[in-house]
Image (cartoon, rainbow, N blue to C red; front, side, top):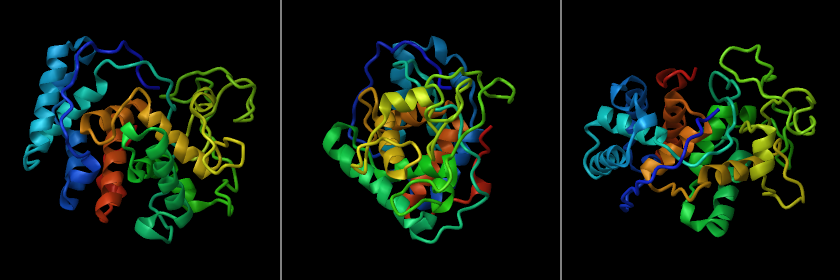
Length: 291
């Protein structure tokens, strides 16, 4: 679960910068991801107590590095994670990713099944109208989809984009290490469990979170977490929540960190997103392991 804390009073400078997914040269995609995992974390070990000055200083360094040649990847990665952990609006969050396949076997552009590309791009089109200030781009949603379920298990969906078999996370009954105990919130309507919750769908939302952000992207009158069109749009809405701008590298990092408060998770999502943007995707073996 993402950490819940009060919103900081500081106001970050909003420079016109390009998001990490669009700026990083293809050859630096993997290096950036590894830097996030391996950089010195001492600077942001006390982020719970970070004041506005510390947040602003980190923001200034990130903006300076992004306007340069990205040579200082370790510092850039540390500052992005610091900002991701800085106090922000409380938000409900998915709980953990579905274990992906070892590697994508899908035919289609960049290893993404065609119907998933269509779902991700459809979400971008809808959000460009419904929430234009978010500046959502489809490759970021695709990065989440890759990490959470390897694009719906390499496109195991019907012609309407609905999973052939529902994607369900582990039962959150407290028996699995690293997972919270979450009592049922929806009477088992989405996850089939009337006692404990389970994350649902190819982008893995808890039922309560899904019901808060659920979107009907294919116009069938029903927001279905097991449908890739609906789940892609709901993921985009969740990432945009709180007025975040996905063309700001600070805010895109915060959005992904809120989805799953793990530095390795952020590194993986941004690396895949950058790979889909540049046309050169990283290897799973080269990315930090998500614990």
